[in-house]
Amino acid sequence: MAKTTKTTKSAKPDKTAQKSAPESKAAPAAKANAPLKDQADPAGQIFVGRSEKDEVLTLALANRHGLATGATGTGKTVTLQVLAEGFSRAGVPVFAADVKGDLSGISAPGEAKDALVERAANMGFKYAPDEFPVIFWDMFGEQGHPIRATISEMGPLLLSRLMNLNEVQEGVLNIAFRVADEGGLPLLDLKDMQAILNHVAENADQLTTKYGNVTKQSVGTIQRQLLVLENQGGKKFFGEPALDLKDFMKTDRDGRGIVNMLAADKLMENPRLYSTFLLWLLSELFEELPEVGDPPKPKLVFFFDEAHLLFNDAPKALLDKIEQVVRLVRSKG
Image (cartoon, rainbow, N blue to C red; front, side, top):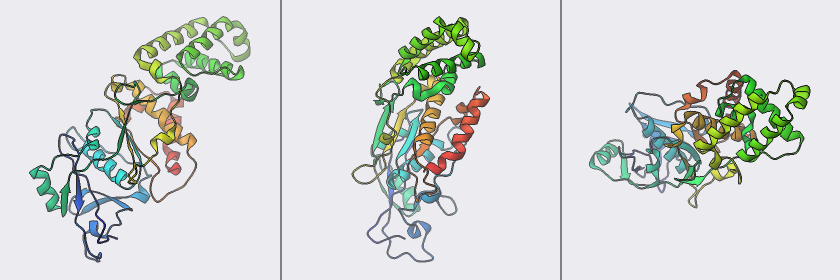
């Protein structure tokens, strides 16, 4: 319920993506026939926009999966901006990949253009430029804080997809992971992976007897793909210190959720690397976060731009993993 001292802000960014958030007029006690934006509890709903009526997103239902679709220029990115601002204002951290550089504009106040002020006034809002707390991340460490993960954390299934291995080569990679695990050998970076593959190649006959067919040809193919991965920036991504997911789940001093922005313009030059990284991140959230059921508001909101890339040329084992994560991750908050 709205209070006389409480104002709620709703986003209406301009086309330059320099963000501004309209501020609702303070209302006296809410009445039964008051507009929805005056009836809604600011902590319980996000004002998204208006059609024939006010459209809101209830935070208690925000851990369901959503899908934004549409042709070029229909407002998909603006929709994500509005939702990201709304979640941040409600104290919910956000993770989003900024593929085109549009989303980053929410980190700076926008310009109160006449058209936007007029539009906001027609909706019953006072237009007020605003900015939101943003932390920039970059797998390559060029446009933000570097993100790192170990080879062990990535695992053989996702690493196989990353290197586009066939079924036989993936089997050999699984054997390499098993050998490292049984020998207590760390797999932190690409050098560690190369070292264990050299060990597998040198002991191929012995390992074939124990685990199944291991050929030097398959090992050689994997090593060449590791070289390709290194040239694509994998050397900067794999290693320590590994990412702590708690870094994504923070609020600022005012209680607003931090918007974690992944610089993905360069990353999208390799769609397989982009999609595999985000799937790994989603899997880590699924595996590490405790079960919480349906909380009053999400712990973290995850925006996956160009999500169709997950399924391109994905083997059945990976599709099964995607399905498992998507089905169950919402109960993690």
